[in-house]
Amino acid sequence: MVEKLNGMPEAAARISGTEEYPDIQGMVYLFEVYGGTVVMAEIYGLPDEEWKDVGKFFGFHVHEGGRCAGEREPLGETGGHYNPNGMQHPFHAGDLPPLLSVNGTAWYAVYTGRFHPDDVIGRTVVIHLDSDDFYTQPAGNSGLKIACGVIQEQMTAQRDDR
Image 1 (tube, rainbow, N blue to C red):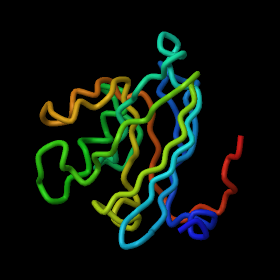
Image 2: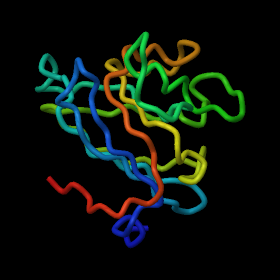
Image 3: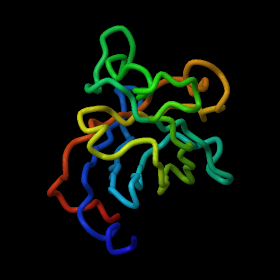
Image 4: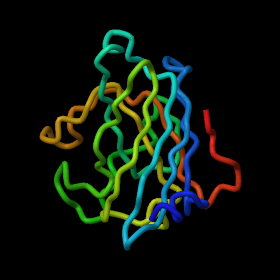
């Protein structure tokens, strides 16, 4: 698995914050591994000032929409959580564990069998201001959408190794 994760991901998303959270930036990488997907993320500029000594959790999901835009609400075109099987939250295919930020930085890696990279190309990865409670319907009460990236096929750009 380590060899695979040191190679080129099958898909990736460049994350940018909304107008209200312009400092958020980073990358999300998706690797096809063992019949599932390893999701890796490097995110910077998260608003965790009040929690910087202990860290703050942020909701982190794959959403159905394919654009990081929205007229009525920030990132409204991202739609709901990716949910091709019509499951209740937290069993949507796009439901992932939250990000943990310390001093505005989060590094993340999780394995999921809920989707393959090819399943989510053209969809979005969204970071929410609050942590997912894994209970509230339909989306875990994770609050405002503060950052987003569109998942694209294998990126040729080098990883951002800060």
